[in-house]
Amino acid sequence: MDFLPQDVAVKFRERFSAEPLLVRAPGRINLIGEHTDYNDGFVMPAAIDYGTYFALAPATDGVTEIFSLKFNETFGLDLDGEIIPVKNPSWVNYLLGVIHQLKQHGRLKPFKCVFGGNIPIGSGLSSSASVECGFAFALNELNKLNIDRQKLVLIAQWSEHNFVGVKCGIMDQFASMMSKKGHVILLDCRSLAYSYSPFQLSEHSLVLCDTRVKHALVDSDYNTRRQECERGVARLQKHYPEVRSLRDVDEQMLRNHEGEFEGKEFNRCLYVVQEIARVQSANHDLKNNNLAAFGKKMFETHRGLSELYQVSCEELDFFVDIAQKHTGVIGARMMGGGFGGCTINLVRNEAIDEFITALTKSYQSSFGKEAGIYRVALENGVSIVREHDLNMIL
Image (cartoon, rainbow, N blue to C red; front, side, top):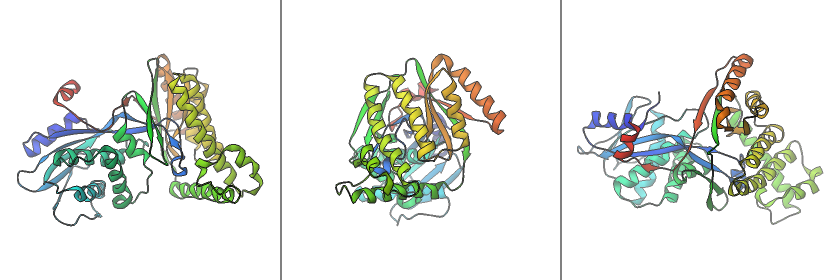
């Protein structure tokens, strides 16, 4: 079930008879730059208008309680005690890790919290990063800890690494916290230097098409890809000692030593090197407001992910093939780790309905499955929802 900020605020008032601080934490998309993060490359994420919403207030009875609307479940804890991961309920570990880290910055006051959201689970829109970032931001505000946003990003990532057990990159949390409405972020995953580029969509929209499948062996395949890249780097270091990662490699260097690679190593490295260069070139396209050139690079990225990196699947390739044949779509690719999830499509406004109809009918006919469709707009990162904003939503 989806929950909007007014749902969270109403439930908080019902349970705790108090006026809460209300915080919105968005999910994210990644326009281009896939599997480049762990190779010290560049990514281009942006926050979207789907999110997780938190209502918090100091606890007048001194008892900390967190209520999940999604699970209809309450978790109580002693903030002065040891904060460690728990087996049940598992959802609370995303929050406990944040509390653990924030306690290093000052004493946290007991509080009441209700949270819920409308990010489609399993769609690759980073609902977990949204939860971590929104909660960290809200507690920082409530306790006046004055921790800056980039530090909160690292706290959110730490929580996922150490309390949830997922060794994610920095992109998801960074996008949820740092995004700027109407812009994408060009993020350097080596230095965390970043800049904003305008994403002007007056005549186009972003449409996510969800295959609603997730094939097995994703984790093992993901780890294999990382290892293949690392082995490729090790081979190149024999000739270029200055190489630290594929970020330091260009395509000519790879081709000079193609015969030295084993198995699929060359293809994996070639895709990453090309994608790192493609992201930087795509950023120039945006600065020149050349969406056609940007969209072409999206198609190129998908081809590389499917043929060289081999992390696509039949359903994702089917979606992109339909998009590429449709005159109203100027760019499309799979988004995320792969083997299922969503494609991201750049579609002319007047063609959206026709494209959605064509894709959903073809998918149902060919695979017997219903596609999920989400139109998204680019939003600011984590922020406080004011009463005026809530009234506008209502």
